[in-house]
Image (tube, rainbow, N blue to C red; front, side, top):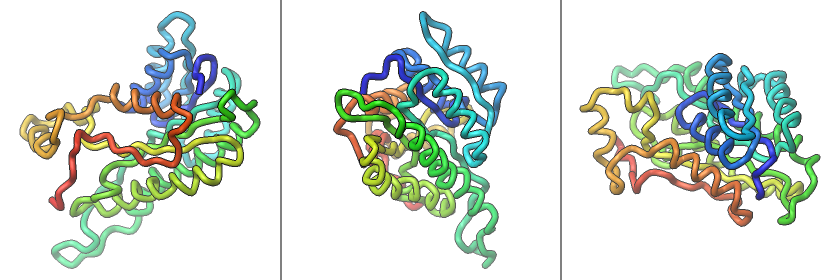
Length: 260
């Protein structure tokens, strides 16, 4: 897809991975909506991304599970140009724990539900509404109207002990990829997901050195955390390559999570 002059929405765009995607898409000529619950930080990231010749980015505050907020983000994107790229980075987790603890206590149900809402439900909500807007775009020379890139995790493939809620939520995102790609083929919209390993976001880089060392230990090569800019480069590659569709792509330096 030709990206220049088109608009994109990046959910969780104020965070470490999301802000890297915002900057990259703005650099290659896209007009970007930074959609995040932290409206102040979304505006800051948008201002930073727009600080270049002809670049445009705007912040929109809201939650991916709030249909009115999503509609506002879509409207802001359409005002900037044809909404052609959606990058879902928003997510997270609420606590953790085993299905049943060593003391026999069952996993908190509300924490599981909230983690699913933050990841799987929010991702699906953004996809269904943004794809509906993309359906009105003119076809490009490759017959495309849009591209969706979702963010999962290698935890969705090999979740560790005590990671049941987060692993299930990310596995749900991975499970959406192929059926959603098949669904949206009818309107010319491609769908892929990225499954990152241990990424060097500001939060991860801020932990104690011994914790960082343990996180890097299982990475094969390069022997370091992934860089947010590398995540953003993969997003760009997916958006540009018209034959990438229905794929879950690992970005992890050959890391494989052990049971823990």
